[in-house]
Every structure is written in C-alpha cells, then in structure tokens.
Length: 367
Image (cartoon, one colour):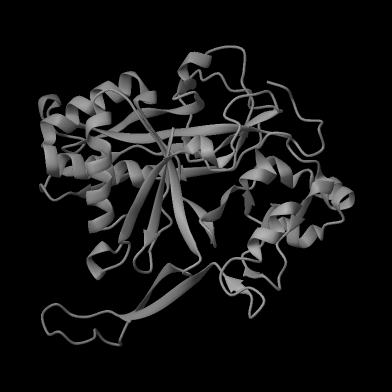
C-alpha cells in the first residue's frame, strides 16, 4: 500500500472520496490511453476489485522538521462509547462528539491506547476542527504553524452566492435569482493524503492518470479553477504507523464501501452510517444518456465485523493490507431503451482499505 499527498492549490468544491478519485483516474486513463484500455481495466477490476484500492482523501497536519500527524475518520462505533471514554479519559463529552477526525496513533497503532491515553486537541492550538489525539502528540501540534501566537484553523467551509445569468442577454434573470456554492479552504499547515494499491494493468497507468487528474481538477467546479492539487511524493504507507493486520475488535473503513449481495459482513455487530447514491438519467458529452441505479453505501469511519459466510465476496487483501467492498455494474451508457449492443456498463466503485481498531469500551465483537 502506498501513500500519496495532495496539496490543494486552490479552494476545493468537494472533499474527494475514494469514488471521486476512482472516477478521476478512469477519466484520465480514457483521455491518455483510450477508451479501449479503460474498458479492459474495468473488466479486470470487476472480476477482482483488489487490483485498484483507493481510500478517501484524509487530512494531514504538517509539522515542522518533516513531521506530520495523519488523521483518519473517527470510528462510528466510538459514538456508543462516548460516556465511557469521557469518564475514563476525563474528556469533554460534547467536544468528543464533535470530533470527526482522529490521529492514526489514537485509532490504530501498535499498543492501541485506552481512553485515558487520548485527548482532544487544545483549542489554544487548533481552533477548528476538533481532533482526537494521543496525548504525546500534543507536543507535535505545538510545533506546527504559528501555534502559541494564534490558534490554527486547519480548514474552513466556505459558501459563495451567485446570480443566475441569462445566456442570451448576459444579464441577471429577473428577479435576480441567487444560488449558492460551498467549498473548503485549507490552511498552509494542512493538506490531504490517500492510500493507493494497484496491481495488474492498473500498475502502469494509475500514477500518470492521477497526476493528470490533479492538474485538471478533482471533483466539482473544475471549470472555475477549483479543485486543483499538487501531487507530492509517493511513500510506503507502512511508515504511517498503521497496523494493517490484527484482531482488535473491528475493521475501520477508510473510504466509501459498496456491499455486494451475500457479503461476509456481520451487520448485527458492525457499526456504520449509510448513504444512498440516487439513480440518475442524464446526458453525457457523447449525447447518450447515462442511467445509474441507486446504491446503498457505507460511509468512511464504519467499523465492520466479518461474518462467517460469503467473505470472499467482500473481504480481500492487497499489498499486505485488508480491504473490503466491491465494484458493481450499476448502470449503462446509452439510456434504458438502448439496444443491448449499444449499452456500455457504468460502474459504482466501493473498495476501501481498512485497518483494525478497538471498541473503546472493549466490549465490541471479535473478528
């Protein structure tokens, strides 16, 4: 498993998920290598999803002297453990509930900490967001940015208002209808990173494709100059301090996950948030309609417990790491009424690396 760093060159419209990265890589492969090459790679990926594994983009706090604190989604299962964690660690339960991110050391590292060894980011050092850290990491945070002078704001949500313009007259449409766009601004002390593993034909194309996509933009509103990234050096993810294997209670998903039918997942013991990707029928650049069926997905931060049946359809291994999820053909290019010979499959990507993590109460199920 490799680690890539992405430094935003501008404000970004969307926080890139593993599905955003996958779509950008596929578009870039089609542009650089041709649609036939992309169709070949997608056919191989459908049969073996572990050939290309992508995490969602996650924040990294840049610390002086080439040090960094890598953050991951706070495990969803920890919401049930908030009273125990707050009591054991004397942590403000309300601030702990607001924390959406936790450091790698706090979540999945050798000698996973007890609640008493965790702390919330000092508001005198980090104003926003609230981050769950291991206590010894506080000293590192104090070295970042201009801590001690004023609190750091790692990133901030933005919202812009726009007037709707008439394409015929170039004037605002009466009575001057407004619409709003949101985005994210990152400080100089914060960037993003993601985990990538490639096998087979993807090994030759993924890096060039991702660099091309970062230059042209990842996510929405690329035409306005947003979402441009500088792709930094590629490192071995093992240096992060993750424990890629082990038996710690559950598996923390680092991206959106699609659950195929009959997947080896114990839903009664897993803890997760669900989202629904709605179906759509729209027209692509080719003028042909795109139809996609709705797909239920697990959001990053889900803590998953393996079931006894069907594990081969959901769990896998890539580069020494455990991965979960699948790639589904959820639609086709050509519209619902197009002849079968003219339908090009459209895929929904939902594969993510996962790392072992604990249930804070230590009463979670065992895999």
